[in-house]
Structure formats: structure tokens, C-alpha cells
Image (cartoon, rainbow, N blue to C red):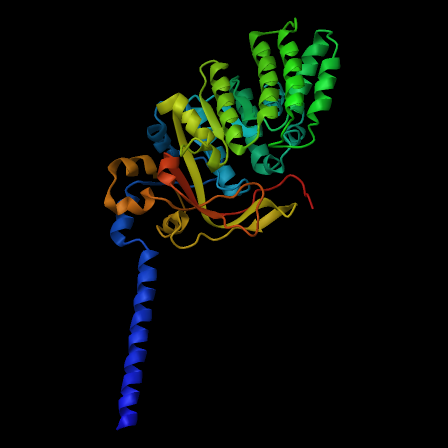
Amino acid sequence: MIKLFKSMKLNKKINNIIFLLCGLIFHAQSTKELSQEQKDYITKFIYPLQSFDPNFTDNSDLKILDKLIGNAKIVGLGESTHGSSEIYKMKNRISRYLISNSDFNIFSLEANMPESFRMNNYITEKKDNPKDLLEGMYFWLWQTKETLDFIDWLKNYNDAYNSRIIFDGFDMQFASGALNQIRDIYTQNNINVDEINELEKILKDENRGQRSYTAKSQKTIGNLLVKMKQKNVSFKSPEDKARYLQNIRIIEQKIQINSIVKRDQFMAENINWIMENNKNPKLILSAHNYHISKLNSERMGYYVNEEFKNDYVNFGFAFYEGTYSASVDRKIGTFEAETAPPESLEYYLNYLNKPIFIIDLKSIKKENNPLAKWILKDILFRKTGSGTDKNKKSFKSTNVSNSFDYLIFINESSNSNLLKQYN
């Protein structure tokens, strides 16, 4: 009898434990899935896309861009990594549509400004080799078949329509391109280049990024740049003079970069310059999601939005799983992307069972319906740069709805196609 009583008590404990575990499992599952009502609501703000292929001939799915972009003069196109073939192709497809149908006339890349501008030698003047020009932009991530295909399309478009679609950059991590273009102007005007050589020696431009210069070096560099501005130089056009002065400004920015925040501020300044120094500008910006974001004052997109207001709209990009190109442990190649974890934005979007689509975050935010609360608050979201640290998570908590007007989701990524092997 005692044994039976003990057995009953033991069974009761086991049942309680099982019940508790089932409850925990059910709770875990319920917090990681959207209800059907939530899915139905969010689907109202989704615009399926037929393809990411830039050569896809039926653009009826892209006509929604006319409504979403409206009269905006600047469109930011992001990327969650710097190495997804599908994202680059989708950005190329959208860029082709905007150039062909909405009179966008400038494409600008998150790359060094002077070196990027040289691409116009190829797309407008039919000079130079585009592969060499891409290599001259330093980073492996632009040296891809996807980028080259788009550049060839720009050249062919200019040829076919007697247009001048301009290619430019807005970054300033290197000074050598600016120095070389200033040197060319000096040579054309028979001006001694000793001060350029002196400046080049001080800059020691072998390294990228946030390099600190001593106060003494900055003063010397500043004095040399003032002399360059004051030179009695003749130019073929006002545009050439403006570009000459902007190259000097690029060097000024380069020596002042001491953080990614400062870099983003300078990139926004350079975008302002592009808008002020081109006729009837309509600009496509291509950069990482982080930079085009409107979220806060650490981001380039925040400053662009402050300056241009409704004239700036942006599209973030996301994918659920797949591969991408990156630099890991100084090795450049193909790497497996972390599959979007439960409770991340990409996880939820993938379970809507639509392979490629635009989601209208701006309208969702405007309605502020409780059924969309999950997408309006901070949520895990992929953030991977050109270099990847295997010990760091790829997903960060971000307020995506405050970052982007629209988001383009692609369920599966493959690595971008590098023009050469690096390892």
C-alpha cells in the first residue's frame, strides 16, 4: 500500500513536470510564430516581385515603385551584406527601371568619390577598361560580375539614348585618387608638383579607414590644401573647377575621419555636393543598410533625410538564408550565412511564403495597428559588412521601421561572383 502511494506521488510529479515542459514548449513556439491574423494583416502591405534578374523583361511588378517613390529625388538602396548576388541583381534591376522610366540620372556608390567618378571615362567617353577602373576603387566587393554587368548596361544606355547617366561615389577613405586628379590639373597648367609630392608623403595613403593624423601633420596638410585652393588654375569648364575643389575637400575629410560616425557625416556631405553640382539631379544611392538608414545621427541616411526630407526615400534589403561573399580571417571567398533565427524579422518574413517582395514599412508605421506591433518595435535584423567575424552574431536588435521606408526581402542569397580569385 505504501509502495503504491509512493508510486502515485511519483507519477503525479512526473505528470506535473511533463505539463510544465509542454507549457514552456508551447509558449516558446507561440512567441516565435505569427498568428494567421497577423500574417493576413501584414500581407496587405506586401508587393510580390517576379524576379531579381536585371534582364527580366516584364517590369509590370516594378510599377509599384512609381507610387512608393513618388516625386522623391534621392532613392537609397541598401544591402544587408556586401556580397549577395541576388541583392546586387535586384538593386541593378531597380536602378535600370528608375533610369529608364523615372529620369534618374546619377548612380552613386559607397566607394571613394574620385576613383568612382573615373568610371565615367568608360560609360560616357568609351575610354579605359571597366575592370581596371573597378580595381582602382580598392575593395574586392565592387569587383564582381554583378557590378560589371550594371556598368556595361549604363554604357549601352548612354550610347543608345545619347544620354549622360553619371557614375559617382561618396566615400573618402583614400586620398590617392584625389591627389592624382589634382596632379593632372597641375600638369595641364604647368604648375610645379612639389607640394603635391610633399602632401603625398605626409598622407602615406597605404591604409584605409579611420587613421589618426597628428595635430602637426593636420596643420601642414591644411596649409598645403589652402595653397592648392588658391592656385591660379584654368579649367575647361565650371564643372571641372568644382570637381577640383571637391577633390581637395575629399583629402580634408580623409584626414579628419576618426570614427564611422564621422565617415557617415562626410558621406552625407558628399551626397549634398552631388545634388548641388549636377543639373536636374535624380540620384540613386547604393550602400549598406547601415549607411542608408534614417535611424539616428550615426547614419548617413539620417543626415540625407534631415537635408532632403520627402525627397529621400530608402529601401532596406534582407534575406533569410544562403551564402554570400565576404572576408573572413583575411580570406576572401564564399561563406555560409547564418540562417535567420526565430524572432528575427527575416524569420517572420520567410514564413509568409513569398520568395521576393517589397514590404511597405512606411504605411504600416502610419496605421500603427496592434497586429503589426512586432515589426514596429526593435527586432533582430541581419547586419554583416565586407568583413565577417566568425565569433560575432550576424543579427542585431534594430528598429527596422524607423530605419527604412520600404524593405525588399529575398528568401535565399547566393554569393556575388568575384571577377578574380583572391586566395
